Image (cartoon, helix red, strand yellow):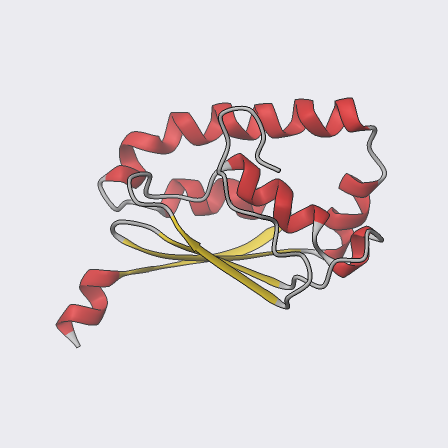
Length: 129
């Protein structure tokens, strides 16, 4: 189920890869990050997801949480998880003007600091090929 104000995608926890679109926001949401953690096999919730993809207006985001990050998040209480996700949402909004222009660098650095391996492929690189 979707969280308050979050992405409405189903968790797709039982596939190795989950991909969905964001028609207007050019970055993954805090809900996407949380779902990647909850659906990962190391979370112990029966999920199989290893790779998450978001097809956004200006490019594709790919992200994978580290096993260490998954285990640390899984050990939190539900309220603590919600607080962490709210903090991620605030940070994402701070980067939104840049990501909307296609500058994903600061967002990628932030997410990598949270324990995710993340990449961004702008569509314009594909058009130039």
